Length: 608
Image (cartoon, rainbow, N blue to C red; front, side, top):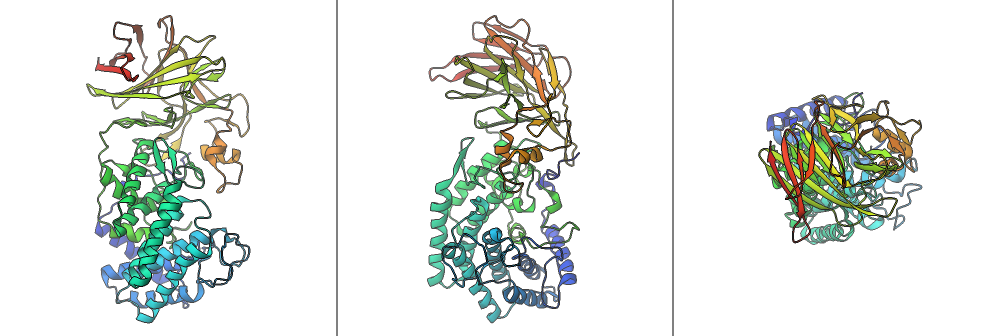
């Protein structure tokens, strides 16, 4: 079973001017065939997210006319713009809308659904989207529409801004992408207004970014991030926020957008596997955006010098939003406009800078979470997620059913590269059921094709084992599909176990259910509004790789050794030496030395 949304890397989509002209030509033909006598360009099946969609197609037609001067387009743009202004601009408050600060303001807004009171919760972002479609038309329709129509559109756009920032609470869904999008709309609008009106709009936009977005960033994996639906990052919306930051910097020149975009881009780079797979988010665990992400990923890949385009997008939306029949939908059209206008090229090489929360070389990568426990391991084309045992999730030693991977103190990290190898040593002080503080030392070494993991901890009672992850997905080149197996070897006994019990809180990787579906089933709220990351925390048990201790380890230690990416037998020797704990395999020798003068762990590495 293929995962429904993680498809091709976004940098595989051609992004030459000729490719974009072909996209706009296709949009043009679809739009001209769809245009109704009233001027409506909405897809016939459009119900939700409808308030901005016809205007979005109008903006694409205006951009196409700017590039081609197709004589069929001026009339279509005028008719469709008049339709939006006449039929899709609402001024009476929507029945049941709870987020008003001023009632009966008369300010314009766009509706999420057209029927009064049917589903008003989406009116705020729909109005943001309509503002962005409007300013794009204003930017690209010079010489295309008459002055009266342009003036009416500008007045409505200004009204949208005032509705969003005066008549309603700002960012009522606590969605960073929507909030930054609103700021972008204000910055773009300010350039089109007379100076006396534009200057206050720009100042207000910058103040909202500073006080309502930037001041409320959430820390994860060492980065400060714009919160998304109550969480630090979401796979679908995070890269969209990055695109908004790119556009904000492009049009304003304000350094703050570049600085915050760089931080978000480096965070994405660290959490994203080399193959482009990622998982997790407070709204969607596995759904990925597509063309909406291209601008930000491309713009900031160039700025930070790393291949962010490996991000796997939902390539059904590779160029623009579509309905089930593949027909163009104007929702998010503003992002395609900016993507076409921006000339930044993809940076296609990985960053060579060592990053705390990432180890990456060749086709191997490990993305670490905030505790420096692997969040995703990629090796041999297979992606491994943290497994669950007795409600505890992660990678690490298990003793008496208790997983030792939750730090009680500072986690130390040391990165080393030598002889074509890349290594990361992670030292975690942890506490088990017996309240004894133990130091777990986890060594990760890769040659770019396989990953060796060696974990050493003070000798444990009972029959401990290493919880070594859950094989979950694999790369078939085109898309990511589900799996329940991987090429793994261990220097101790190795077993792949599956939950004995059934139910939503026991995840069997052999089942058709995806992680996202299982996580939503455990979330407090319905799919689309719940928090799958929070729901997944309630998981009791899962499919798991379990590795026994290495034989002949030092008497004072339990040592576990696993290799991902190959089933060939694994031989590891571990012994104390003059320089520290020496780990030898047929591929490398590593020495875990004493801490230096600053308490940081020493690590030396050489090839076999």
